Length: 364
Image (cartoon, rainbow, N blue to C red):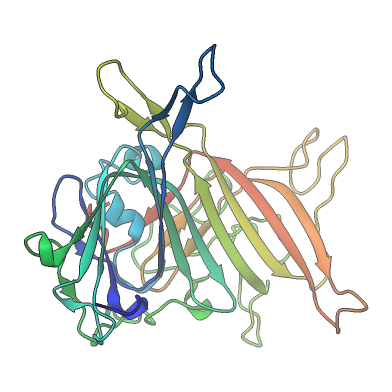
């Protein structure tokens, strides 16, 4: 028997639903599995005791996080076979998720596991991408379903998801990828092969590069963050975080206990948080008459394009209809040990989130 389970003896895999063709995920940092049994009580006149504690279908939730490392994204593994790369195009894809557990005396997740869990009929319900100035760039995905089966490999006739790691795994070797993506791998310069059309409907660049809102002081009218003569960028961006929650409500039908479909509850909010080191002001004016921040009279805001591109080929695009929801000026307190003032710009859009990567198994 193993005495414990730790990071080196866990292996995560994703497969097309209904198959055991699992692809081992690389760069995984954490996996969490929560099982909730939904109970509904029935009482009756005549007694205080419960009449029946009715069991509905269970809820299985899996949360996964990986570093951006050149290997396929979890979101793409979980939506393999999607007809398009949009939120709607990827929304109906079901998948299977497996976690294999190996002996704590092994150096890696190789060979035959001690146990494995298979979760089928899983849907993506939330995802987020974080690009920080400290630490690694990461992807987090939450999936939901109703089926989770644990297997003791020794007594169930062999493993369905055997180990593939051998202590030689490294970030996928893409030329110039930088390995695990860090702050230096966020690209503010155009990538070769981008669109030929120079500007989009917002007047911001269409090129395959990081494009930020023109609301932010120092960002150009085309959404670029130019390099100054001393090699620093015009805007010292500290972090970008992009996230969405797809909800997932269930439709049921008479004659069966399971759901008929688990659908995304559109419209879906897509949130982008951009933190910037303050060097002058947030440059956001607001009043009743409007005409501020490049917007026409009657409005203080205009649509913005937001896109983040990293060296490994990951591109997260929230479309061209982002609007500033709030800006916060914080920090720089007298009692804070000389801390810096930072500005947090919060943007909101709906139903648009395109995530692309050269290793997407769907080829989108």
